[in-house]
Length: 398
Image (cartoon, rainbow, N blue to C red; front, side, top):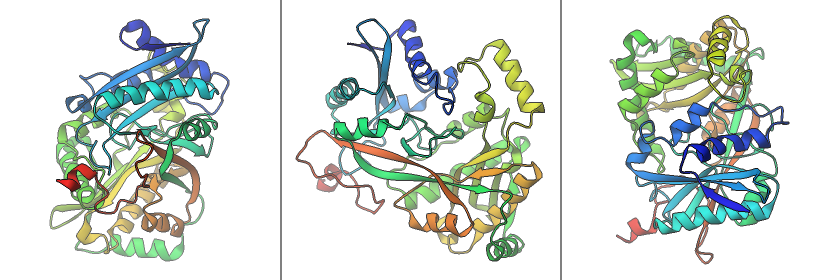
């Protein structure tokens, strides 16, 4: 076996090729765009490099055939959010062989130890947890935009190495043709009509205003709710909206205001994976660009969407304004003839939101797990609960 660091154009290309080789006969796998993966590991594109580092390796067998890959990374803004200083691994791919998987995990652990980390979470993304986060353990089907897909045996590869279930991520789905519960729908319509609240959807003509509102709302909501939180910045979200401009539907992004102040939002993306899967090998060749543009404009291919973010500032969370946001969102989805809506993945530590999903008639479609591996076998493992105080012992000791 040969473990090779990714450090030149040849190994960068081989890193991209690993999943294309492994999943070539898997009809559920949708090849991500090469530019998306390259961008994650490009300091010019990914602001996380301002606060940390990333490294990648590929694994080859004796004949030189690609059989695995892994990335390790850390972000100094996040490493102490947990009760033990933690780095991350991601973009893990491997044939069904525990010995080879262990080689990849060992290499990542060795590097993270050298950076002063004491644990590693996986499989994750070098960025926010909105996209490509967790190991898929149930719901092996073509995934929506930003959702991680992997072979079923990855669960065993992780757990046999010693990774433990840090938290589960549940993704619920609502079929639009199924009637919404009448009581909830009437309540949503009533709240949406209350004069103290106004609802607006995003427009590119007023992009700066809405991105500022998004950033303000997100930072207010998540600072109160989530310990494992990094503040969003205008520049990051502005860049993201520019990148998704070709397929973003303006009235799939809604805000609610009171006295001109944003107090809640819901952000939905069309499932562009339904088009990407028709492109060849994730490469944006001229032909693929033309094909993508054509399908985006004329095809009826995209008929499902995914909520990537939703939230209401604390003082209005009991006012029902989230129902008003959903009322306008549902009308927009129906207007555009969308058939399915996947709700933002929610951790098993958040039963209130999971209860809301049940109440609107959504069903559990798939489950991912974020694993944690602690380097010191004598250190106590704790599952993530999002309770206050679930932070680094070092900060507590201070």
